[in-house]
Amino acid sequence: MKVQYFEGGMYEHMCPACGHLHYIPVEYPFSNGCQWSFNGSLEKPTFNPDISIIGRCHYFIKEGFIEYAFNCKHHLAGHKLELPELKNKTNL
Ligand SMILES: [Zn+2]
Image 1: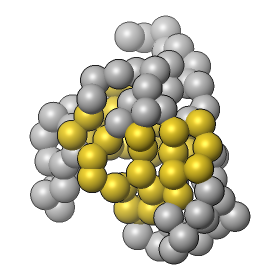
Image 2: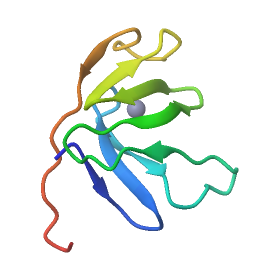
Image 3: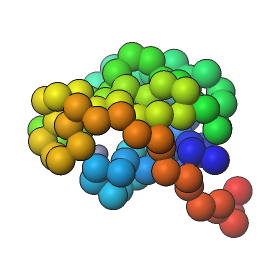
Image 4: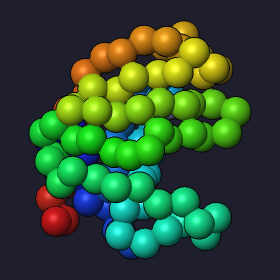
């Protein structure tokens, strides 16, 4: 799977640019009011709208692919690649 449920209404995915997990709130808004729609697919996830982590990553997730905007602060800016597979968690 490429995304999985984390907690608090958030889903997590691996960001190949950072090498870290990013969390996307879909059930409840973040404290800053941001919230995303999710197509419910763990293999070909789509989130709307685009996701911006200030000063670092700005990207779209569509059909299991992550598409970085040109204003990212890393080497994958402007690139589109398949989301990395997540390892299964044993505590789910
Ligand atoms: Zn990132």
